[in-house]
Image 1 (cartoon, one colour):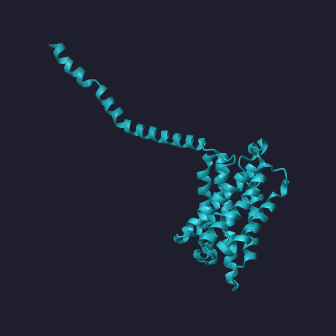
Image 2 (image 1 turned 90 degrees about the vertical axis):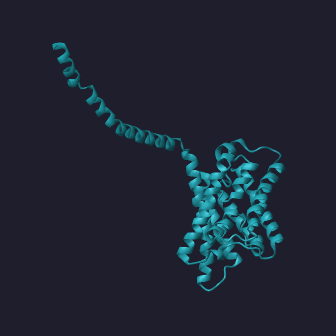
Image 3 (image 1 turned 30 degrees about the horizontal axis):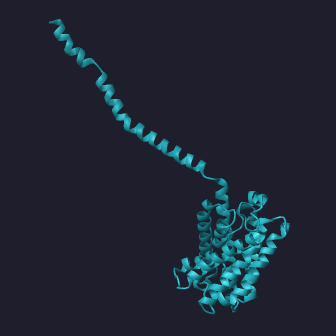
Amino acid sequence: MQQSIKAPFRELSSSPDISGSTATSSQPENDLKNGDSTLYKTLFNSLNKIDKSLARKVLAEALGTFMLMFCICAIIAIMRLIGMEVGLMEYAATAALTVTVIVFSIGAISGAHVNPAVTIAFATVGPFPWSEVPLYILAQIGGSTLATYIARLVYGIRSELVMTKPLQGCTAAFWVELIATFIILFLTASLSNDPQSIGKVSGFVVGVAIGLGVLISGPVSGGSMNPARSLGPALVSWKFDDHLWIYLVAPTIGAIAGVFAYRILRLQGWSCESSQAQKGSAYS
């Protein structure tokens, strides 16, 4: 009898059920904390895996293209503010001076492409890695678009006025854009292959080439020679004319042809020193 009476009290006084319920109630909170810590660790590891060198190059390209496009918008807006239309010499001088500044500023960081056609050309024929091409192009288009938008806010200029349009027909615009870009990239290929040939004045040489390209193409096509330069205003205004393809295709073909022609004429591969030091640098 004593054993049968004590057994129920022994079962009721036992505490495993109470402690088990407490552990069960605290388990979701622990799982939530563990989940948050795992997420933070994953994000931290992902940030650590980002190539900081590539990030600097991409940011430099975005900034360089922003500078180029903002200065072009600025000269067009300023000339209109003083009651004049932008002339060929003003446009050419602005483009040449801006590119000179850009080359000296970011040439040692990213190669100062600031032009999707240049990036594609050096990836197709030169030593530039294809893995970096999409980021370069996105940075260049983004910089151009942002510059056009900010210039519209600062100067009150309509983005349609900055758009490039054929002035002597689409056929003439296509060929002049191709030839002008060919000339510029033929020069920049030589600078990339032998950066010691002209030393620290490479920025001025490239600026002269850009100015020449604008002078021979401006009255015919508007002097773009850069897909990002034409695409930025089109994105801001959201107007994609039928001739926009000219400013995307012709400079790209001309750039590839220019780099390829230099390599064929030189009859040698890329200089080992320039390839390792610049890894596709366009102007330095």
